[in-house]
Length: 502
Ligand code: NAD
Image 1 (cartoon, rainbow, N blue to C red):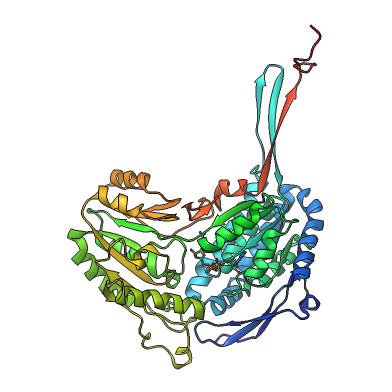
Image 2 (cartoon, rainbow, N blue to C red; image 1 turned 90 degrees about the horizontal axis):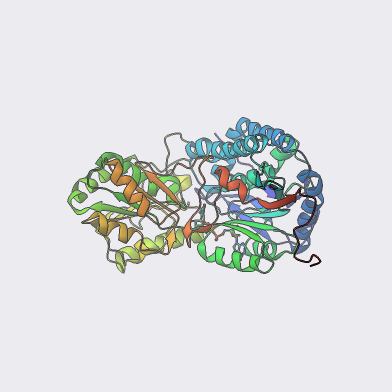
């Protein structure tokens, strides 16, 4: 039995929650999506509070940026250990806030966030921020150094709240920057837990501050002259606005945006494995994963067998009590998102006229009474889809798979790439040379062979085309939190000049 506590959330600045700075501010009612019970009141941060958060981070920057990397690393490693020790409580909160099953939040969201913190703490302690030096000629050499950027802003989406907060703050703080973080207005609860963990680990006050609210707070942050960089995760349409306002002062940006990723089953693939991959790529986290492989391309000759195996396995998708360890499928995150996903399913049936293999817009059967008001949707599969259907072209961000038959590998690569997005892609097949050849041709930043979805700390991830700018994680991910300085040293004793006396 899980305790139900009502939470209040106020901006967290200078090492403390600041209820006095919320006076007169608007509030957001946060609900548990599985039941629609209210779980928290979020006090949005007015401009004066956001200014305070940014100046607090700016004051902390001098000392934090000059703290040796190895000392920063020790603090971040302590925070990672605290995250692991508190996984159970954090996962409960994340489950209540997002509607993801506890079986998922306790094994993926919290641990993979902690992994990234550990990764960057270790990286900066072992020379990850070192520059290079090389001789230019006998009398001159060049060296480079990496400097932190200053006060950075992190803006999160609602689907992986604490993980996104960690994927942004870990490299940011490890590199010597300070951060003002704004979680999504739909899933804000983790932010105060994270800032308290950082504080307990010894992070100086002001290095990581939290403000709350929706688009207006995000927009104020991205335009703020005290901000050096914006790291954003969200929809392509919002990303355009964020990049636009950050461009005013040439702020650095990282954009982790949406996708409509192709999953290609090659003719020699193991059907069982490919079906498992397609299910992970569409129903994990109730389909609310940016890298979802929602366009599943299957050889025409394999369609019947693929559909049969898929239908057999659909019974393993288990909605239910989120704290029952057998539950592996939760509700959607919010009413507005539920309406959007249901709208796409109806459009698929009524306008696209796609063939519904299973699921649909009807009620989810067999839920406990307490959950019947929740934002549940059936895991849905459309088959025999065609490329021009709206359900095939637009990001739905819910548990809706489209199966598209194809005839030749040459044709499927072309069709897979026929989208303005390029976040992820993958292939299933036995001929590994063919798999690599297809991967080489796919226009996406994150790709998988014979698996789907794993995104470890060591692997840089970021979208191509309209799916993003820059990467997160891996060694490359650290580079986007520093600026480079190159220094040329002349040791010849005199400046090579054209302004000498003739
Ligand atoms: P969203 O774009 O609606 O909101 C994201 C964040 O932006 C929220 O915190 C929101 O308050 C804020 N925001 C809204 N308007 C803003 C503005 N004008 N200026 C600044 N901030 C603003 O996205 P969402 O619905 O929360 O998240 C789902 C989307 O995120 C999907 O498209 C998904 O693919 C994408 N996503 C991408 C990745 C990735 O790594 N590529 C990861 C997770 C989610």
